[in-house]
Image (spheres, helix red, strand yellow):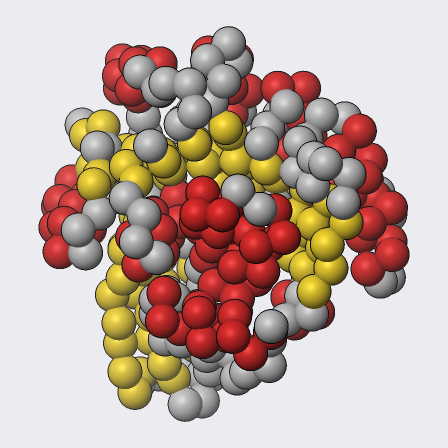
Length: 301
């Protein structure tokens, strides 16, 4: 079973504006409301690829109810803890030539509500996959990722960490199955500048030496690099296409990698599926479908 975690999911309100001007009245040309949160995105794409998952986290208020309704419409199994205080956040994304985002803070999670969530995590079994992605809200202890991994470290759960900075670095002691920083995050974590794929390989190896079993580094339009646990290095350029939406491309890469690995047991196949699924989401208004991912996969063969 695959589980995904979004500590702070959202409704994403996307607005397309022809010419955005600060300090003036702006009118959108079109609007879309989509379920949001990195773990939620992973679950949606996994479902599109034919793999069921359960998404965990916290929701609150009428916006939380709407999020649950939207996920049910997409046939996503969501088992969120309902928070008494506050509202599930609405994140506004204004798209012009560039994209401007305004992310809300979300509800406050109490100790009792957090304890219910940890009980859900403790129910995971050996062989399960758990995707931990995104930031941790201020009401949740900053050690949450490490606490989760410590609570299941003896169960042989395959943990995927898609985070940055200290959150990612401190997770390495628990030997995550996969980590997925982008090249900017990789450079920031290690205090260096990444210039090319050779740099990515060199510094990704440092994270692997610290405990990560597989290190997948995304490089936007330049593709990605994977250092797998068998010692092989995989490198691939991104498929060509027009970027329409940057939201969820990294999450889609994680979903594609997991789907490819579960289906084939091959890190090479997982790597290619990850890149093509991430690119398919970037080239679409919404998250990638299997047909879109496989169309790009055929072009890359």
